[in-house]
Image (cartoon, rainbow, N blue to C red; front, side):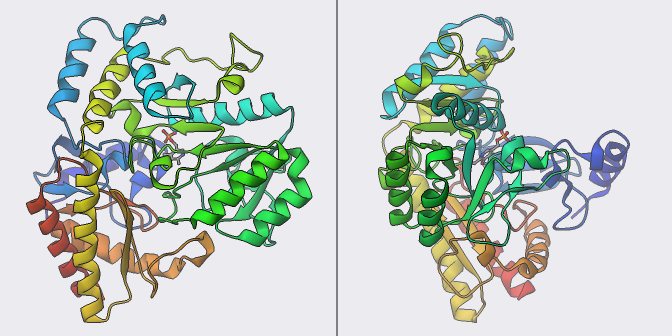
Length: 429
Ligand SMILES: *Cc1c(COP(=O)(O)O)cnc(C)c1O
C-alpha cells in the first residue's frame, strides 16, 4: 500500500492546523502512522491520494447511511446549490425536512435546525435548564455529546460524582454543574436521583451509546431512567446524533419504545452536509426564542443546500425494508467474524445493533459500561487497523469508535470485509 502522497500532505497540514487536522481523532494518534487523505468516494468505496481503494466502514463517522455520493443526494444538492447557497431567511426545504421529522417521530412536536450535533446538544441542555429553572445536568460516563463545555467532564472515582473537566478551558465551576454516573448501573441511578433529583434540570444519555465502544444498555435501565426523570421533573434528553435515523428512522425508539422529553440529531440528518437538530414536546419547545426566553440562533441554520441533502437521504431511509436490509447485512458480517474468532479461540467479539457494530477484545458478548473496556487492548486494535488497511478496508482509526455499514455496501463487499477481518485477526492474534 502506497502512502507517499498522504504523508506529504499530512506534513504540509502540520504547518497549518493543530496536530495537522481539523478534528482530533482524524490524526491517527491512537492507531499510529499518518492519516490518509481521500479524494473521492462512491458507494461503499473510498479512494485516496496515493491511488489506494478501500471499502469504507467509517462513513464519515456515521452520516453516510447511503454510502458516498448517492445519486439522489448528489442530484438534490446540485439542483439546490445552483439557486444560491444561503439566504438567512426561511425556505421551503426547511418545512419539508421539518415535516418529515415531525410526521415520523411521535415525540417530536417541534424541531429546530442547527449546524452540528454539538450545537444541538448545547441548545437542548440550555432549553432543559431554561424550562425547569434548574442548573444540574446528569450525564453518563462513556457517553459523548460533542464538545459542549458542560459535558466535557469526567466521572470521579465514586458511584455518583460531580464532574471534573476533561478539557483544559472548561472551568471547574461549570463542570461541577454536571453529575456523572456509570452506564447501566442501577444503584448509581437510584442514588443520583435520591441525592440530586429535585435539582436536576436534565438527564442526557445516548440511548444507544456508540462513541466509546458500543455499550448497549439493558432496557430496564433506560426504563428506570425514564421513570425517575418523570418522578423528579427532570427532562430526559436522548442524544441520538449517532443512533437517530441509523437504527431505525425514529432512532432508539424503534428498538425500545422509550420516549424522551427532548431529542438531539446530527450526522445522518444532513445527508453528509452540516446539519444538527433538536426537538421534542410542544410545551418545552415553546421556550425557544422567538417564542420564549431561551435564546438560540444560527446564521447558517436550516441552510437550503444542507436541507436538500438531508431530505434526499431521509427519503431513501423511509423506503420499506430499508433498515431491515441493513441490519441483515450487518448481522451476517458479525456472525461470520464471530464464528471465525470462536473457532480459532481468539478473545474477540463483534457486537452490533442495526448497522452499527463494534469489535472488542474480551470474552463476553456485550460490554455495557465504559470502565469495562480494556484500555491495553487498544494496542491490538492498532495492529488490526493496519492489517485491515493492507487488505483494502478502512475502519475508524481508534478502537473506541464503532463501524457502520451503508445501504451501498453490497453482499459481495460485506463478504470481502468479513474475509479481511478474519485474515487480519489471524495476522494479529
Ligand atoms: C457525533 C456526536 C455528537 C457531536 O456531533 P458533531 O456534529 O460532531 O458536533 C454528539 N453526540 C453524539 C451522540 C454523537 O455521536
